[in-house]
Length: 406
Image (cartoon, rainbow, N blue to C red; front, side, top):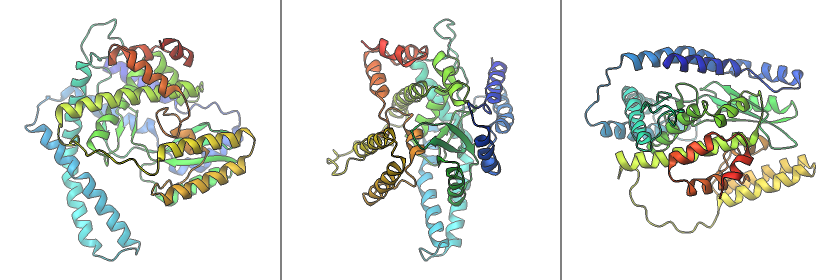
């Protein structure tokens, strides 16, 4: 079974170079721009898969004492490390005075302490997620036919920064036409340089950071909260799980550019988001009650509604573009970006590519798709989380979703 997973994964990777490109000149120019910065998933997989399979095969499965305390210790280091990195950057840039050498020594110690915990924390969290999935009767893609209570694909992940993603959209509409993975350690200057060069090809470009990436093993960012990490690890496993189902396979064809289907992509991303959040909430309540889930005082009604503002911006941009007013749409987005910054919400670049990327998640404030509401309604009418997942996993179109809602 593990060998089959390796073969299927490598076959999928061979497709990653595919493209629906009708314009070879455009793709040739794009390729020359990103070549110095491109992240090779295939090369990373060829190294990572044997390492992980070796670990799975020869691991003794020994459990450490105080697993929860170890995980909490790991995540207690995340924010201090980010704070030290920000302070050092501010001093080095001349925005702040201070002794960066002593701070760098503190940073190195904290990073070393965190690194020493990483491997074990990955295994602990993976084991906890597997337990919650089992409680929900979710094991493997064929578990309705083959009653083996074995998790597949094996739930593993890497806590390390995922690659960046270059998203390219046409200027006259919001649509992800190309997505290319870039190196993990890109500087802001490099990101903006890439965007500037790609924009000259008469498209809209944006380099975004990812919280996770569904390679095998998946990446999960190592600088986020415990709740986010559990959710992301579950989400990336679900992407791999669904690859063996009709919905996920069609999404793979979309991602590789073989058969683009924005609605399928939105359905896939939204369903894994809904399921992973539910699994993640259960896991945190089961293992970390009181750590991140302490009761919070009722929040006051915010004077500024970011979600509503983003939806209104998206709707206005769609209207501009539908009327062929591309320049006006871009000027409007820049004005709104500056307005959002004045309200405390900093977005580095707001353009068509931004909405193309974030709009895939139908429960995102930047999406105007009704798919999110329809999937939530289907979840509410489903007997269980597994029933919901099984129902959506065999869908092959938006029409299937509409027909499933009572």
